[in-house]
Length: 188
Image (cartoon, rainbow, N blue to C red):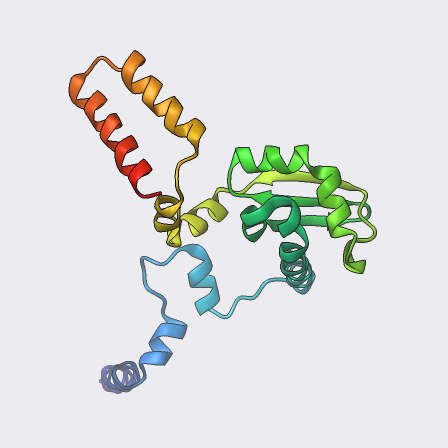
């Protein structure tokens, strides 16, 4: 009988804590749908110090590299992340295969631009890898509007026109392409 009474009081106490302290619930009892990282963070888990230091170093290099690379890579420099930096090699993570190949092609120019800052002076080799999570983050921003506002180049207009007239057999699709070209050229 004492155990039942004690159990009841404990249950009432816990129920009172849970009802009154929402922060306690969020930090100690994560959502059952949460992923593993969120559950570990709620339990107070942290990255090992060495890993945390390396992450901070890579993040610091990423912030330093964006303005340095803007002259070589243009808008792509805002999507670059430093994924590895040790001894004489630095590896940059980019959102697409095309951008990674572009950086590999321009690696000498990129290294020259990075050498303008003393933090990058030790690096003589550079690589590029693809990190699709960058692409998801970047595409989550409002990039569709900026893409639509840019006028089409003469070469693009010519290519679409030729494709519409010579390749496409479906009349409604052909009309759509012609309409696209007309609206794109009238916005200029």
